[in-house]
Amino acid sequence: MLKIWSMKQQQQKNEAAAGPAAKKKKVTAAQLRVQKDLSELALPQTMKTVFPNPDDILNFTLHLTPDEGLYKSGSFSFTFAISQNFPHEPPKVKCQQKIYHPNIDLEGNICLNILREDWKPVLNLNAVVVGLQFLFLEPNASDPLNKEAAADLQGDRDRFKRNVRSSMQGGSVKGESFDKVVK
Picture 1 (cartoon, rainbow, N blue to C red):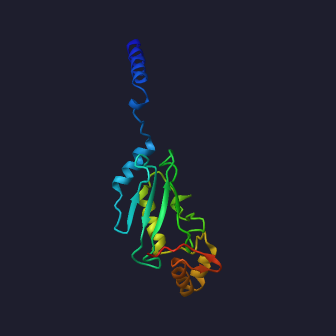
Picture 2: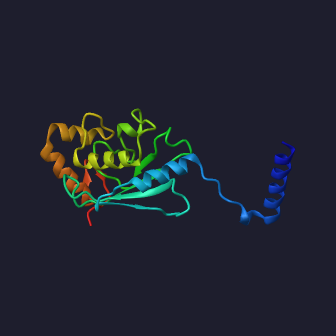
Picture 3: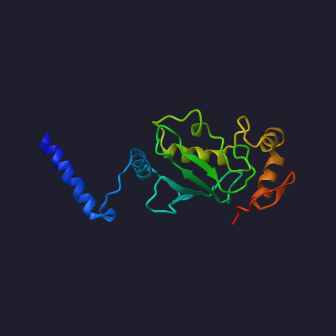
């Protein structure tokens, strides 16, 4: 036991003598899980991930360009902020563009059940990506964050389609201006 203690003290002295540059970065459980999830991510051509800081895999951006549905031809960016409690806590995901969508409010918050009450540690980042993709194919008016868009979708689908097209062009809907997301 004394030998282990003296070895540990010697290791600490060596690390202190080597300075801060020689210190190894500790990898957290969250980083290991995110690394695994990212390696298993099978993104279609309509999506790509960008890491602003290559050393920080817990914060990245997902770019999504739907190739079908009402939001076809739009380009949307989502920031992912993953806490050290991942996978026990869901990632925080936000849309960077102001868009007209029943499940995305004007501040970019997203109403996706697996990002809230239905999150389970067995879910992975691929489940979140598929969920985001599905929101653009099938907007859900029964669980809205943007109640006006949801009311349009439920009450007059043609008006909803016109409002989506107008907003994606950078127009305004009901006095609210939106970001141009069509390239």
